[in-house]
Image (cartoon, rainbow, N blue to C red; front, top):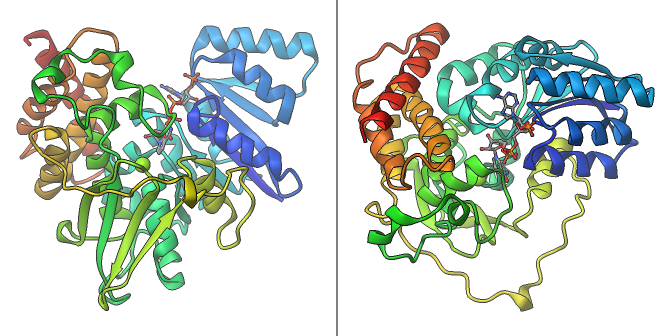
Length: 396
Ligand code: NDP
Ligand code: MG
């Protein structure tokens, strides 16, 4: 039996993970689940899965949930706060942790789980982007297995030779005869919009992704293609790849989830419906496979598969993220932090869609020379970059 903790259980990835667990209750137990404020959904999770413990990080939501648990007579313990996230993720009974909190809030519990050698199903790319080498070195030191959930990285993982799959975080691509990793992305909802109209797009237009149903933050990141920039950095760390080893290609149909090109000219691709239950099931069952509830692709219903180079004038955030990763960890951390603040401001209607880039770029340039030696230095960069982002928003 695999005792699983789902960090971010009420979100889009969390819900898909619980769907997979529900199909395999003989192999997986939901030991713990966490959320921020959605106590209504957490109460449903408790009724269905009866986890040993849940955590809410918003005080009122925690009180509401405790009242429901008491009145309905559930045995589940309800804890509050950030420290409790780490406590649950590191419980001795826990085998694996689905890291699916959105944004930097996922960092501490994920690192805590790594430090106890848990198997990590990694959806929360921001925690890896924020800390880079610290994250992968920590996984190596504590023998915590990293299994990528992000659909592109899971696709690449599936196209790697078995020996490399066992070495996530320290792959040797040349030794495996791999000449390129090809990261695909749909280009988001504004792929064909007149560039001058980008400044006027609304949050509801930005979160309406053409192919995937996801949380709001990653949906906006997909529209700016900052998501692909973060994924570029994620791929560098997971597959120990250099900048030149990775190519980003726009593939609007989201049928191919990414590819690996070998030195003999062969290209291996992973295809499937755009449904996160496939990569989640692949990560959770590795090295085996389990059913996920995802219907197979119907090739006769597919139109053409098309591919194009990303246009950096349309997607400057993609370029910025790649450049930052070539400069330093501090600049990368700063871009990630500024993006989180800017996307939040855009979703609240405080700034324009195109201001997301402006804020990130202005913050990034202030952190070129910042220190990035250890976790404390990185956390300081993250905090200062957020404050700088708020200042930049104020003077837009
Ligand atoms: P959602 O916004 O749907 O869910 C986020 C989850 O995190 C919710 O459970 C939410 O709780 C919880 N949460 C939010 N803020 C905090 C906080 N401050 N402290 C603790 N918990 C918090 O996000 P997604 O599921 O879309 O994305 C989760 C992660 O997975 C992201 O890092 C994203 O980049 C990555 N990812 C997502 C994909 C997708 O298809 N959705 C694909 C690939 C990667 P509550 O509901 O109570 O607010
Ligand atoms: Mg992805």
